[in-house]
Amino acid sequence: MKSNEEQLRSRGYIEDNELEQYSHLTRLQLIELLQSNIASERTIGARLSIA
Image 1 (spheres, rainbow, N blue to C red):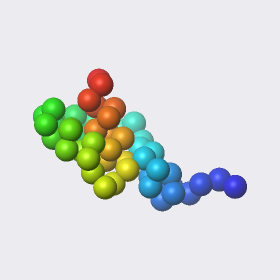
Image 2 (cartoon, helix red, strand yellow):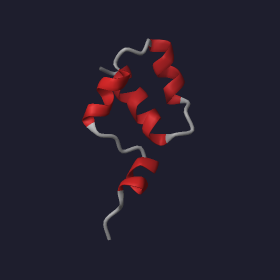
Image 3 (tube, rainbow, N blue to C red):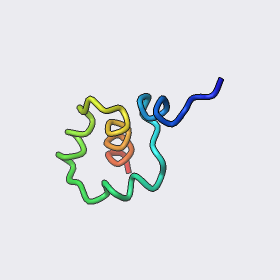
Image 4 (cartoon, one colour):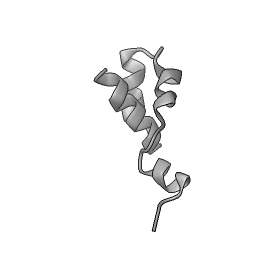
């Protein structure tokens, strides 16, 4: 059984082009994303923090 997009996003899946929308954030804002209740936002924060 394959997961639908909503299920994937609830587990933190993001598309690569979504990172571009958040690339302007400061380090502090990225840390705040890591504490988000939304899994995909935590993923974005993590990926951009190590970039």
